[in-house]
Amino acid sequence: MIKLLHTADWQIGKLFGQFEPDDAALLAEARFAAVERLAKLASENRVDLMLVAGDVFDAQGVADKTIHRLFHSMAGFEGPSILLPGNHDAALAESVWTRALRLKAIPANVTVCLQPEPVLLESIGVAVLPAPLTQRHTHTDLTEWFAGAETPAGMLRIGLAHGSVQGILPEDIDSPNPIAPERAGQARLDYLALGDWHGTKQVDPRTWYSGTPETDRFRSNESGRALLVELSERGALPAVTPVATGQYRWHSEALALRVPSDVELALQKISAFGPADVVQLEMSGQTDLDGYRRLCAAIEQARGKARSLLADLSALRLEPTAEDIDALKADGYLGEVIAELRASQDGADAEVAREALALLAGILDAQHAKAGGSL
Image (cartoon, rainbow, N blue to C red; front, top):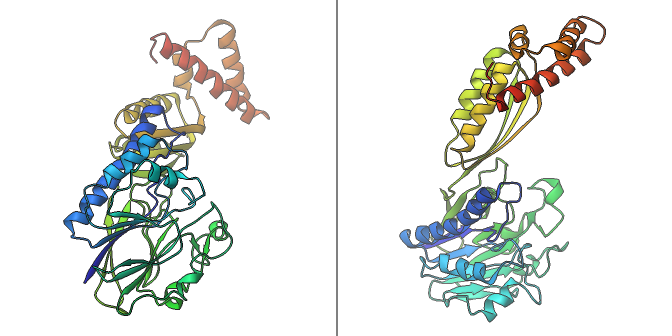
C-alpha cells in the first residue's frame, strides 16, 4: 500500500489587494500556515510521498525571504515531496526556481520537476511523470508524453500536471494549458494528480484536482482541501479521501431587503460572521433610516469580529418614513425642500422625488450622527 498526499495551488506570496492591508497580510500569512498543516498531515498519516501539482508560488518575483519561508514551512514532513512548476511559477530560463537553487533553499527530500522526464522513487516503487510548464500559457497538451514514457515493470505510474482538463472545467479556462480528459487511461496511469482548478474535483476514478489548501477567492468550489490517496497495487483503482485543510471560510452574501422583516434577518446573518469568515456582502432593496443605521452599526461590529468583511451597499435604497423625516428636524429652507419632495411623491415625478428625498435624508442623518445627535 502506497499513500500519497496530493495538493496544489499553494500560491505562496499571493497579494490580496482588495482587502485592507492588515487583513491582506494575515491572509497571505495563512498560506504558509496551510503548508505547515499539510506537512503535519503527511507526517501523521505516514504518507509515502507528497505531490504538489503546480503554482507553489503565486509569482516569479516573490522575495528571497518568501522562498526560504516556504521550504521551512515544509519541514514537518521528512518524506519525499515532488513540486511542479505551474503557470504562476513556470520553469522559465530565469525563474523563482532558479533563484531557489542559487539560494540553496530546496531541501534534499524535495524534488522540483523542471524537465518532462520520469522521477523514479525506487524505495517506494513509484514513477512520477511530470508535465512542468515552461511558460505561463501553452496551447499544447504537455501530458502527451506520458503515454509513451517507459517506467520499470511493477512501479506505480503517477502523473503530475497543471492545467485545464478539456470539456470538464468552465469553457473560459479550457484553452490555456489543456489536458486531455482521457489522459490517465491512455498513459496507463494509476493516478493523475492535477492542479490549476482551486477546488477539489474528480475528473474520473484516477484523475483528481486537489484544489488549493487555503481558500483564496469568493467561489463555491470545495476549496481549502487536500487529497489523501491510497494505491494498493499496480492497476488498482485509487482510494481518494478529501481532507479539510483551510483556516478561513470565504463566502459571498447577497441580501435583498424587500419588507421590514428582511432587516432583522440581515442583522442575524451579519452578526453570525466570526473570526474564520472572509465575507463579500452585497445589499439591495430598501430600508428606512432606522434600519439603515442598524445595518451600518452591525456591519462595523462584524468587521471587528470577522477576518475580513467587504460590504457594498450601493444598491440599497434609503426610504425614510414620515417619522424619520420629522426626526431630522430640518427647518428653514431644508424643511421646505423636504416638504416639497414629500408632496411630489404623489405626482408624475414620484420616483425622482423619492430618490432625492432619500438622498437628502441620508445626508442629514449622517450630519446628525457626526455631530453626536440622535434620531
